[in-house]
Image 1 (cartoon, one colour):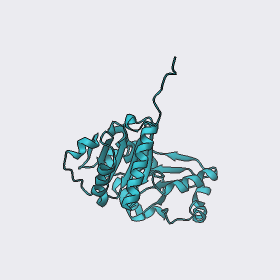
Image 2 (cartoon, rainbow, N blue to C red; image 1 turned 180 degrees about the vertical axis):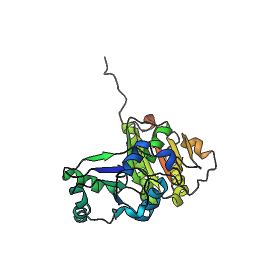
Image 3 (cartoon, helix red, strand yellow; image 1 turned 180 degrees about the horizontal axis):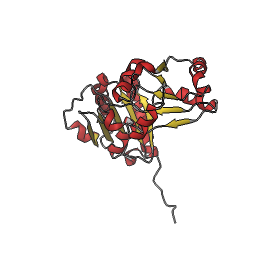
Image 4 (tube, helix red, strand yellow; image 1 turned 90 degrees about the vertical axis):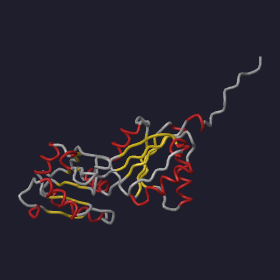
Length: 250
């Protein structure tokens, strides 16, 4: 019988594992000896900090990152085909969410393997929960383009889609570009569009604020170089593309 494929969440803020990784997830981790990880060094440090194993040196780690080819997956999964369960660990948060682990999960399904997601922190869902924006309809876009003009065009397009579909748009940014992106959002979005910035979720510097673009512009805000999630929802009435209903003449 083949092993199972466990998707193991990792902390999204340093030193928070005891608070954010549930006991049920810890018990599964403790039962495993084989791991596919985005970064072996980070994963070793994470598992060593959990103090679940006599020594992490007894565990087997293989790299699964953006450079891993589909052809390499067959070899990486050989222990699973032979009955050894595997844990997939991302750099932070939940595997396969904005993460190369998705490729391995798709491979596992194609091979008829059982995939088991485990409970843990997701910055995307935590930010959405705390934003006050529409949690019924939302879309995560990963990173916006680095080029300024391309980013502005994308922001304006997403704002129109948000108004048309009454949905929340969610994306992330490299920490050292937080303030650059924030400035672009203030310059590109309409005054009544609501913007939420969630910084260092679950960490010591956690800060989550949501207000209109007009309100943000009345402040001077500088964000720290920490992981951030940006979310916005457009005001539907400003972008209505449905013509007003007119009554026929008598």
